[in-house]
Length: 233
Image (cartoon, rainbow, N blue to C red; front, side, top):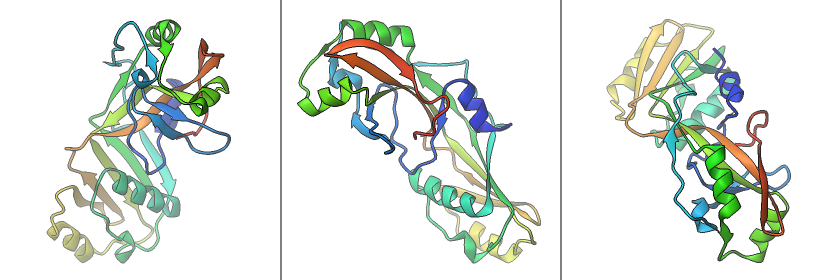
């Protein structure tokens, strides 16, 4: 099942960049065609509300091993490199053993979704005061350039299948296995498919749900979902 379509139905955008520091209730700046940049680690640094917001696990969105993203070989190599960098994996050059291929499939295991309800956020922002911010921030806020992360899909394990157009050198795979990388294991599914699996000990963000904040002269007007059909992150 296509993971991107599965996430989009619930308003989530699959992260395809190297940055993996996303958390619920962060504020990000989105200007024009630029990628969002982290602005504040927590909404409470800017909006002083009457109560603390609660982040809960959302059982309505399940990401399972049957959901995957498929890339052609060249793009898949680039994505694979960024993913390994993002989750702290040991970098290695796959081209030493595989120069050409058909596709690279990526799956996530041991995933869960942490989110904050829109009702809770709407109430909080309606009753909050804005304190200790710069004129620049107020300009961005009143220009609807501030995004609020309302949900994050986290996973602990990454599974990558590399499908080639010729037999993979068994000796090369044996060398990878002998290196005993503590964060990554290798196995041959068949003569033309290499599986790489992370050890599943480090949690990392997979997808983001975010809304654009609508303010006018410091007054909260509403929120608009932006990650259901846009590739922002």
